Structures are given as structure tokens and as C-alpha cells.
Image 1 (cartoon, helix red, strand yellow):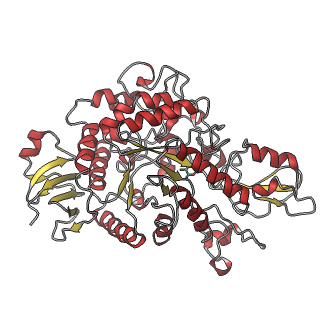
Image 2 (tube, helix red, strand yellow; image 1 turned 90 degrees about the vertical axis):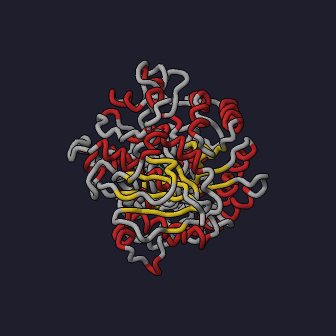
Image 3 (cartoon, helix red, strand yellow; image 1 turned 30 degrees about the vertical axis):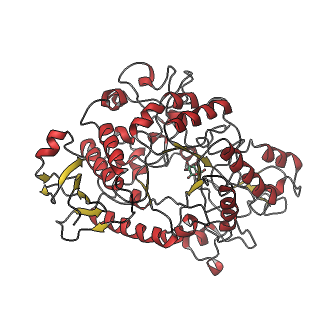
Length: 532
Ligand code: GLC
């Protein structure tokens, strides 16, 4: 959940915690096990809240700590667990410790908590290296006294120095602070970049890009030392009963993910492989096989993600020809090529039904349960993502998946709240409103509810058996207890395997399911079969 775009209770155009609390019945009806809240901490919103001023408080525009407690209580009352986002690679430049660092000057103990370096040249007028930040532009920012600080993301996001014991201790305090308030788990932002080796000479950006590093030593990506940090966090998680959980956002090669996901580490790691795949039977099956094997190896469960607050929504990705450069397409206003909106939704529903049949944890992103496409034609003047400015207008960024949700088909901000929403909703958002889909047996919302409810019966044990003798374009597997999931990613119908159809991402009503004799193209069905 991206809290600023979920529901706005006070009409200031920004979603807030009481807004989420008022919509807990929607989450309960959806059937989710847990809610992951992206950052709601005090922030200047230089990066959608991932620039954290104070990790142990709530942004006053979003609510108060007491309202956070109310939200946790409301979710727990429905058996829904709460996961909060921890942002350990960087703080915001308004964090108390960063302000103290700036005031204290070069060489001070205050600066040692961050990554400050003397600039090159007689007066330190050149950056310590030519590294580029993720959002574009240089990764070092001068502070006017010959020192520069490292920011792998926006300049408003100075990187912490994880060699500093106070930084380590402070994050343990933060984990306990939220755990004591009843939080059940944590999502760890940029989990692979915390511990850095900045010994001289620093490699150049060209060397980083080419991977031609001395001893293969990357200065900040996926260094082994980061796992010591997570072992200490694991000890904190285990102080609680039940132990707190965590999931790593680690952009590392698949075979490196296991260490983040191990039971001695964070316990789970996002697998973004499906999110990178085309809706193609061969790619989907390969990704699933690889990730189930990796999960077994690390003694954890696998995770599946098709959409999140950082990527173009999957209903839109699948509406475009494979290989479309999405950022270039957004820059063209999302019309060239024209998205095939119906096909995108059909494939998105089929893919979601496939992942909901898999063993492991599936992470859904707010609005996908409505089949929402990306808002691809936001005006430049409305864009908030630092990517837009930092890339000098060559990448539009991630705002198109963060437009506030449509709850009703009419009224102010389509039921999001009484004020003007912080990102404008297009008129067609009304067609996807929760109100329209409620009680509509063929809606995407109805499909998600049914699939999530049925899924609860599929989860144990976490095994899966592939069917190999299937038509081209088909992904089919069996789960214990006689369940089969079959996805036809081709465009022509294929025969259905034996069994009673209990769910389909296409025809949806009980009558339609009873009459299904073949599986239409771009559709997933679940069947109950005798378990012999
Ligand atoms: C993660 C977040 C993203 C944020 C970045 C920097 O990738 O998901 O939204 O911009 O980290 O904190």
C-alpha cells in the first residue's frame, strides 16, 4: 500500500492513516493476510516518503502515532498483519543527525554517521568519484566546505555509514519501537546496499557498469558484510513472540537472493523475476521453477510480485507489445504504441490467477485488485518522482502507478477524499471504482476476492507438480489436494484438463464456470481433480 494514495480522511489531497482505517473492511473483504505500508514517516517527500526525517514517528499530514495504533488495532481485529517499511540505506537531509553533520564541519564525529569524503582538487572542488545516482545525476553532493556526501538516490537522501555503531544501534531501536507497537513485520528498502567499501582508489562508474572491478569488489552492492547487519536484526525479531518477519528488497542476481531470505537473515526476499518477464509460458515456467528451487535452498518460501509502487502496472505492461521501452513509451504520453487495454487486463488477470496458485507469498499492489492500468499521460507539471527532474526529463518515473484510488464512480476525487488529490485522477478511473465492482460477479475485484479465498486452501504443503504434456503456450501445474492451475497464454482456446472448474480469470460466474468446456486464450482456470 502507498498510504498517500489509498484514502484521504481530511480532504488535504493526501491519503492518511485514518483513511486506511476507514477502508479496513475493503481489505478484509479482499482477504489479504497482511498489509505492507510504504513509508508514512515525517518526510519532505523528495522521494515519495523514502526520504525519512524520523524513523520513529508519523508524518503529521498522514496522522499521529495514536492513529497508527488505531490502524494496527483495526487490521488486527480482522486478522490482518501489519508490515512497515524500513529505509536503512539513507535518511533524509532533514534528519536531525544529518543537520548536525552539516553544522559540525569536516572531520567531525557528527559527519562520521554519513558517508562524507573530501572532494578532489586543491579545494575539494571535484567529486570524490564520477558515480551516478539511481535517479540520475551525480551521486556526490558538495556541502560548500570541501566535503561531499554520498547519495545513491536523490541528493535529499544521504547514505548512512553502516560502519558506525550508532547507526547500527539506532536501527535496532527503530525495529523494537515498531515491534513494541504491534507491528508484525518489516519490508527492508534497498537491502543490498547498506555496507560499503570505499577504500581508495574508488572505481570509476565505467568500471562499475562494466563489472571490471578489482577482485570483483563492488563498493556498495551486495557486499557480504551486509548479512552481519541482518543477523543482528534477526536477533531482535526473535525477541518477540511470535517472531517478527521481514522481506528484503534486494536487487541482486537470483542466486545471491538466498542469503537475504535465509532464516538467519531477513527470512524472505522479493523475487522480481516475474515482474520482468513477458506474459509468456516459457518465461513464466522457467522463473517459477528457478525460484522454487532457490527458496528450497535457502529454507524459506518464495515470493511473487507482478506490480508495486515502483513499476508500470502489469495491466498496462501486458497491453503493450513485448519489448516496449516503458519509460520511452511514458514520455510519449502512453499513446505510441496504443495500449490494447482489454488484452492487458485479460492477461493481467490470467497472470495474477497463476501467481495466486503458486506456493509462497504473493505481494499485491493497491489498485491491481481493480485492474487499474497505469496513468500514462500525467502532465510534467504534476510529476513528483525525483526521477523526472534528476534525469533531466528523459525518464518520467513512477507517478503513474501512484495516482489515488477510485473508490466511487462519482463525487470528489472519486471517493478518495474531499480535496483535490495530490496526483490527478483521469476521468476513466471512474470505470474502475470499487463501488462499480462491488457485487459485480464478473469484476476484477470479485476475481481477486474469490482467488484469495480459494488460495488459502492451496498453501500447504508448499509443493507443486508440473504437467509437461500440454499444448504450446500453456502453463499447468498441480497442487496437493487435487488442485490444478492451468494458464493459456496463447490466443486460441485449448482443452481443459479433467476436473471441476472452481475459478477462471475469464468467464467468472458459477453458471459460466459450469459450462466451460475449453480454456479460452489468455485465461487461467483452477480445477479440482481427484487426487489419485
Ligand atoms: C526502493 C523503493 C523506492 C525508493 C528507493 C529509494 O527501491 O521501493 O520507491 O525510491 O528504494 O529509497
